[in-house]
Image (cartoon, rainbow, N blue to C red; front, side, top):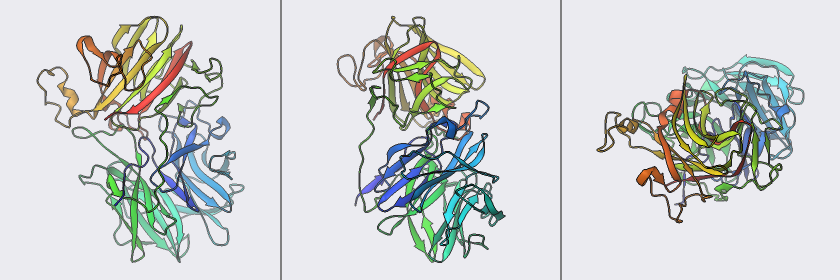
Length: 525
């Protein structure tokens, strides 16, 4: 029997919402303070997803001023297809509230926002047979709106507060047969996260809760997937039912740490006595009948095009003049807009970390600027490898502390920078391996981040002699060059930094201008 592996969208891809059009599936996720906002994915089998664009790819659609904090911005979008158009409804927390955009094609272009004067977050969309449009909101309330103008015609009316757990949110309203079903997340988005459901004969209730709520929860379990919740249901083309949901994969010693953010998982659904039955969510499941693999993104971006690939994201925006692919063709040229990664307004272009064990590397020509490679959670939690004035430095920002932990001279001109991220043993922090007395405390964390500099234009996974990664050798040299520092990954985790996002690895400039010849990212075994 063919199986698939979870998560189906690895890395920081939370709050998934999905819709089907014929035999095609489209999925969107939260993007919070990053621009462009709301990634859009396409699949033919619910397992293999290809990113086809972003819903909010124009600054006018997505105001994210500096006062929007980390993990503010775009929360919990819902995607639906109705009357020949795609609709996405969401909340811009801290910069406008709830709004709706539409498009004839999922790739876009998407319309400018239609703002909706409704309180709360996590709006959902559903249509009745007569064309009436309903919005469900965290809480849980239901309102009737005009989707063309955003005018609220009725409500919001409180209809159900969930099964009694905290924070009923992420509602989705469905017409299935003769019933309206209301699916909600409960218990908060951490380890108590769960999924509950109720049904009624009309969108405004009264709602009857499922007898076995929550219908899904990994709370208190030893399952490797935790924080399961914020789900959406979809019926496949063959009539089977599936659920997409967020979850996390914690690593390390107690309390365990998740560093990739909340990811998108897929689980089969059975209907029993009129109620969905799902779970537990495994890392491997029997696959849907359809099977349509897609090509992976290239491991290396040589910046040879005229537009950035849709997976590149930037915190709070990417203003004109801060980046260019044409100023030096074949290079990504970045210009500083702020002098520190510790405050909003800096120039940063990155991509999500999607594997626990991976390598990211860049070829940088710093010129007279200050630029480098950063692994980022937010402005107060990031590790940076930067080059300026002939010196490469590793800088750790952990909460209120900012410290240079290593430095190394580099010659003028282009230099290769890299970080190797590797999971560590799950052992108490007091366990020290022989010969590792000074660093054994790292064993309690989820992973380590080893930063290195090189002097060759090395392809991913190759050393100077074309060999493969062999780790650190004499004089601190690795296949990637000279290792400068190895840092504990727990400080770049949600459990330490807080918030709703995961790690993003990217290129930055905080002084002058610099050019990046290529950026490479690859999973490591």
